[in-house]
Image (cartoon, rainbow, N blue to C red; front, side):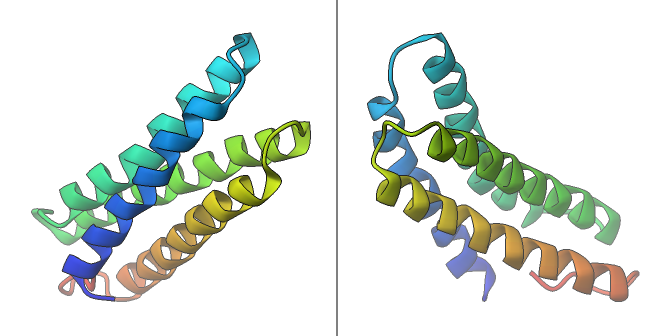
Length: 123
């Protein structure tokens, strides 16, 4: 997947969550989960954009690691929401699948970057 396409995909990844988080119950637990999901999902795209301007392979790998961490953390919060019940399971699963795909692509890119250590990063 090329850089421009992944930039668009990571941005598109965040948009459904902005609408979805408004449906999470407004209690203490719901507000914590809502905040975590919203932060995680939206930071994937912003951190990906940042890594596109990496100054070195080391910088690229560091920023790519942040993207993976945020995608994985989002998956964790979505798992909690899914397992707690009471919300549209299909909608949660769709958002979760997006996060899983981004995490998988990011993990693959990290593995490639580690193998290519010292060479130009392959976005």
